Length: 151
Image 1 (spheres, one colour):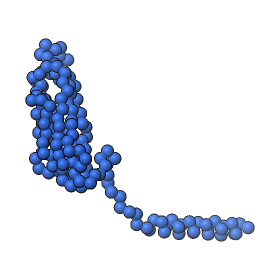
Image 2 (cartoon, rainbow, N blue to C red; image 1 turned 120 degrees about the vertical axis):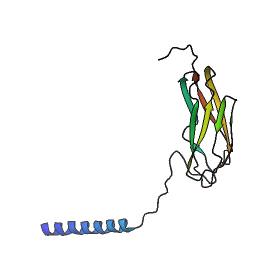
Image 3 (cartoon, helix red, strand yellow; image 1 turned 90 degrees about the vertical axis):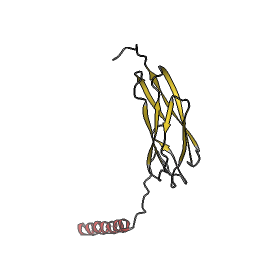
Image 4 (cartoon, rainbow, N blue to C red; image 1 turned 180 degrees about the horizontal axis):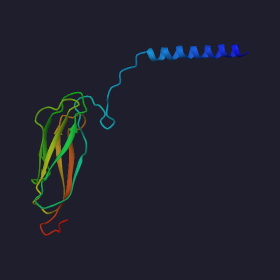
């Protein structure tokens, strides 16, 4: 009886091992690397790490330079044709050369921190991005006066 049981167990084990060997020898399809936060698009794409920059509370005449980082999540080059601030106190800069698919780029923005008080301003980006010819980014914060307590 023990011999019959042992033969049955060995038979089941050998069939299972053969089935597993066949499964592992099949070629698995190649996986495409796609970021969950940046789905791929046909044409040029534009995905920002953040669409709002919060300066927080900063001193009067502090460094007003900040950067928005974007990725071209499309399959064609992204061309930014313009970047404009909502007022003269917000000056953006942008890359003039095409941004390759998958590449990162920076939109620079400089806020004039000689203006005391709270602010919320926008920067409008114009590009060839599929489905969003223009994108509005926001900067906000508060510039303290010279008489504000420090520390």
